[in-house]
Image (cartoon, rainbow, N blue to C red):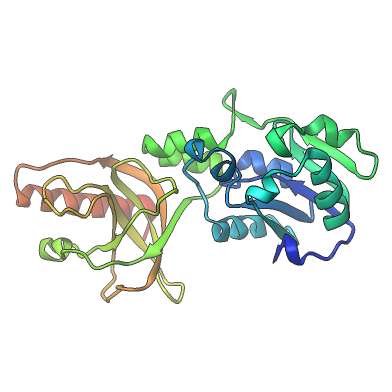
Amino acid sequence: MKVTPFSELVPRERVVAVGTFDGVHLGHREVIAGADTVLTFDPHPTSITAPEAAPALLTSLERKAELVDSLGVEEMVVVAFDRVFAQHTAAQFIDEVLVAGLGAAGVQVGDNFTFGSEAKGGAELLAADDRFETKVLELFELDGAPVSSSRIRTLLRDGDLAEANRLLGSPYVFSAEVQHGERRGRELGYPTANLTPTAGYCTPGHGVYAGRAQIAGGEVKIAAISVGMRPMFESGLGELIEAYLLDFDGELYGQQLRVEFLQRLRGEESFESVDALKRQMAADVEAARALVGG
């Protein structure tokens, strides 16, 4: 799939799905289905228009592109959302972005999509324009409630990865460079890759998770993943994501590590002794192996 900045766009006839699409969850996929182009925004518009209310993101732009690509879309067009673009009126967005920029023959949006300065434009305004065909999708529901990015963020914060992943339609992924730590895991017999949560992005609630980790070169290992503050040890490092890769022996410092969270094993705990902690870590590792397989 081609990823094109809007500033470099060549207009052609397109069927365009438009939205922020944070998470590219099941509801977003309903909007995207049948489109050959996805138009999205970076950074998230709320981070510019109301930064105090900006949500913790589910996906980086790179992860969003990966997910959109998996849906068979030909091109993802990215609008650099800044204060200047935020001042575009709804009419300007239609004229300059959808018609002149994209050459849209069809436009697909969710029924809660808004656009233009002060969010004054909506699905009705798009449907009234006869220069393209507009398809408006009702909010997709599961279990009687709309599938939304905010619903998924709440599930992640609560540690309910199984349900969050069901709504996402794919595993929740976090990627970062492996940092040097205090080698505490190595001392305990379980050397971990230390990752620092990225500001502005959603982190699963504190606890231990079963998942997978992909290292440089594409090799994938089962992982037992801890998210939290390590209550037994005073480190001063703040919140950490620590991944123990099963059946792996090597150095990962400075490498990008991609972690897929699949299911929560337990909450964060403080143990009465190091031996008790080690016994629990051994149990966590075997639980991760049993859940993920291999």
